Image 1 (spheres, one colour):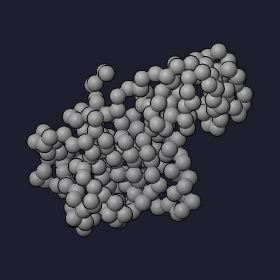
Image 2 (cartoon, one colour; image 1 turned 45 degrees about the vertical axis):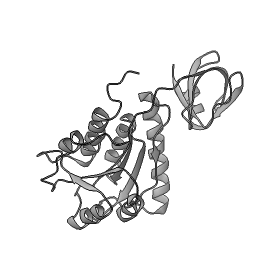
Image 3 (tube, rainbow, N blue to C red; image 1 turned 180 degrees about the horizontal axis):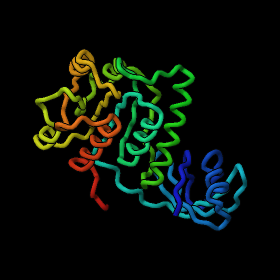
Image 4 (tube, rainbow, N blue to C red; image 1 turned 180 degrees about the vertical axis):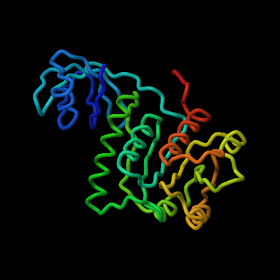
Length: 250
């Protein structure tokens, strides 16, 4: 059954009006008609089966049939802090990070960030990224999409996470001592992990030092120099494989 996100699912036996982009997707894209069964998910992570009662161009009326048990969340809460990338690369990163179970995605600007957005650009891009996250979450069976914040600065991120109890990591191409694999396998699993990925030009030494002062640890993935979007997905996949739910069928 097709999945759709709504703000809040009512109790069994009640009706719900779906509007906005999800209604358009049901009627204009998928051309679903009354009688079709769908799955609904909401911001709390609830999941239910519903049937379409009526379908207009702007509104779809559905009847809630039964609540369903949502899949178990990943045992690890991963926050991906991603430096702003060019449009296609950033969209790709948001999409795949959502599929791989990122809990939060925090875009930011740094010294070597090429992409610069004004305040209006921040709002428009954030809406766009959130739509990508929702669609990717539906496709991958997540019951709720990741939180996608408006872009901030690297300094703001360092301050935000300074006192948080979490494993805080920087993937840095100039780190030659601490290997990511050795760090994970030599440590008990953390419940929360924050990973910071730099822009196409990487981080400066000064930036890495400021992040270290905020409790971040620089690690290397090995001898290969990865593109920023590749590094982000490698980080998520490795964490989910080692400490998360990758391979878990429950």
